[in-house]
Each structure stands twice: as structure tokens, then as C-alpha cells.
Length: 630
Image 1 (cartoon, rainbow, N blue to C red):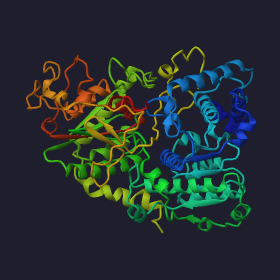
Image 2: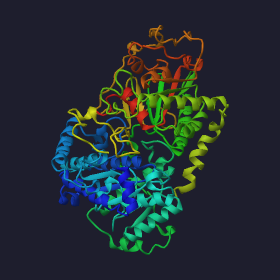
Image 3: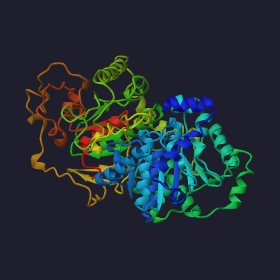
């Protein structure tokens, strides 16, 4: 598929991608009259499009609209990509719709080139068509459609007349296919703009914003800039965003304006605005949209929005897990700042010793050199680097769709060893341990946020897909939609805090306070871990795991960083057995786990940061919240 894209671009025939996707839609059973009737909010961007999509869907849902949300990649299970009213579709419905669509494609194959759309579709093509069929058949009022990659050439760009388009913050990404300048990136993202339909974006790099304006003028599409949600508004209404992090005020502000534009523009056109865009001579002429007063349903939508794996906190009695699948330098800077600040706030409320542990994994041998130096300055007591399997016996959990990995054992071992090597090298060079405490808040206040934002003023064959599609389906890597490889993302639910064991599950933290009203929904299985059944780490067979709560050990050499063959082993080591749910999941250990530093062994509470890739966060969530999609 990537070769086809390169060929079509070289031949100047990228428009053939629309021919291909339209053919896939017809063969999948989607009729033209159905395409004309759907109500779509289409969202592209480099960073924040997942958060913006989640915020937008949540606001719509809390206004009583029946919503469809299509996102990619998924975090834990493939059905997370297709949500109705904030929940992934059931396994039964997924299988029902999948086989219906798949059979349609098998029965309609015709001899053609790939771009003519007569072959079996690639993974992302098929899931996109399937999602549309689900949304139409399930009778949603509005579809929030997140672009997979790029915009102009993305498979979601089949939408002919979206009600409104959104473009989140832009930066260099996927440069091999989207271009190596911000202008080229902006051209691809702005490719979702349609004639006469409004587009709302954020304050961008001026070069990117100019490209968006130029394309909007060509399409006579009214263009607006959504201003960030000001802190004064959050204070006035006494709420916080469900998805945490300093940049989320940008995404929330955009989501509010997308919702308002959808309510205003659905079924109508505004010729005065369409004509007005052609008179804009420069980016300074683009209207800025303030959030103004917020309705209660907007506040509920923003405050209860949850994205797994995005500044997510899961708290147990003696362990707190911080999950954020930051995988770029910029996002890792925000992750490090968020964790350092929030963990310090939590530590201030805990009496006793608190230790910090890093659990990290990434998908590229080039990434450790870029990402680990940022994390080195967060003062971790220990670091765990594991393979991507959840456990040796159950690679990614009984209910996970991530069990089938394309990466070989040899490649994964090399990757993990490389990660450990980079970390050890950073430790040996005595990187400053205090710099982040001085600079983390400046990262969010003076970095990308201040630079660009104002203040408040692959193919599938029938042989490949077996009977149990949910357990055999490989996920599509977000960098390669051609193949059936592993990809992971998150999805929103309508709860901000989920009861989980003896603690609470929080998407972010408010001023360091880990308490709130626990809202348990009827379809959420609550884990009940009785205090009398709690398992102290000293109860483990010490012949198998030589790390004791009293500090005694079977090995004399402490290891501040270690590699593990599965995420579960790494979690047990990182938590030192303080989480009974994790500790009891590890079957009789076949190997001795390394001895952790005394600061970890003697800690009363351990804070674990899980980051580096959506793949790792998905694996860890499969252990911590195995029933999160039920």
C-alpha cells in the first residue's frame, strides 16, 4: 500500500485513492444515499486529534445525541475503534458486522489494479468501511471521525459533506509519506476541508495556518481559530478536564467549538460566511472563537471524558500507576512534566517513603536515544524494560487482540537490550537529577504551548482471518496501514473515575487529591479485592522471587534497571508485590527476578510511570483492567 501511494504521488494520480475508497464503500454495501445522509465531524491533526475527538463525542453524548466514534489505533481490543455512545461495540456485534462486510468483499472481487478498488481491502480500509456500516445500521445521530494518518489521502476522507472539520495542532510527523516541512504536513491535514463546510483549527505555526487558510479559500470554506479554554472558566464552573495535561485546554476549546459548529451548521448553509472567507487576506483575519459561557452538558462532557493511556492514573492501596503512551520528544516532555508534578503532589499526601519506577518500551531502535534522556531527569529509583508480551503463558491477556506480534523474539530482545543500554549510558554519565524539578513546569508553560498558543484572550485474506476474529485479528500499526500489524489506542467512556479494587481509577489528578465520587456503571465489572486477601510480597516463594519486604535478599547485587521477558514480570518487580492483583497474576515464577534498589524495597508507596508506546500501555492495561471494555 505504501508503494502504491508513492507511485500514485509520483504519477500525479493521488485522486485515484478516492476511486479506490469509493469502490470499497460500494462493495462493502454502503449506498450513495446513505453517504449523503450521514452527519459527520471530521478531525485531523498531528497531536491531540484523539483527545479532541473524545471531548467532542462526550459533549455530544451528554446533550442526548446518539454518537458514533471512530478512532485509531486501538489500545487494547480492536472493537475500541468503533464506539456507540462512548462504549466499544460488543464482541457479538463486532463479529456480526465484520463477517457481513468481509463476505461482501470476498463476493465482489474483480480483476483490477489496487487503486481501482477491485481487490480485497487493506486492514484500515476494511475497518473504516465496517465502522461506517455499524454507525448507519445502529442509527447514530452524529459520527465523530478521527483521521488515521494525514488527511487528504486518508481512508476516512470519503466524507463528501461533513458538517464541520477540525484540525488540531500540527507538527512534523510521518515525514516519509506526508513530507518533511510543516507546510507539506498542513497541506495533507487540510485535505479534509470540503467545499462550503466550516473548518475550525487551533492557533498554529504561521506557515501551517497560512496553508489551511489558502485551502479554505479555494474551497470557500469558512475557517475559524478556537481559543484555548481559559483557566478562569474552569475556576468559574469549578470543574477540571477529564483528560489531564496543560495542552488539553487547547483540545477542549476546539471540541467546544466543533460541537457548537455542528449544532449550528447541520442541515443548513451560511452563504455570508462562505463568501466572507474569500476576503481574508492573511491569517490575522481569521476569526478567533472564545468559549464564553458553558452549558452544564458541555461541562459534563469535558469533565467526564476518559481516554485510556492518556495521562491516566490508576491508584491502588500502595501503588499508583501513571500511564501515558507518549512516543515523540514533544509528547514525552509533556508526559515527564505531568508525571513529575502530579507524582510530587501525590507524594506530599502520603506518610512514609515513596519510590518512583519507570516502565518503558518503544517500537523503534531510534526512539530510546530521543526519549530516555527526557525521562532520566525525573528521579526514578528503578527502571523496568520488558518485551511487549503481557505474560509468558498468555502473551497479551485472554481478552486482548494484541497477542499476535509481527516483531520476532530476536528483534524484540535486541530492542529491549538497546533500551537498557541507552538508559545505563545515561546513568553512567551522571545526568542531572534535579534539572526537571526546576524545569518541568516551564516545559508546559514556556514550550510548545507558549510558542504557538495564545492565552484566553496491507491486505486481508479469508485464510488469515479465522473463526474467532476478535482473538485472531492483528492490529494495524499507526505507521503502516498496509499490513495487519499491531497498533494501539484508547477510547472514551462516560466515567471519569472507575472503582477498581480498594482504590480508585482516575484519568488525571486534581491538585494532587486522589478522591472523588466513584461512579460505577452497570456494565463495568468492579474488581473486589478483600483486604484480608491482600498478598504481601514477602509471601512469595522466596526461592523463586528473592525480593523481601523486610529488605533481605537472595542476591547481593542491586539492579536499578532490569530487562524482563514480559510486562507482568516487570510490573511485579516495579511494584515490589504491593499490588495484590498484579502479584497474584504471576504464576509460580520460573526465574528469579532481579533485586531492586533498597529505595524500592523499603518504600511504603510506589509510583510507576508506564510510557513510551501505546503498545506497552495497552499491555499493562490488559493486566490492570482486564474487563475495561465489558
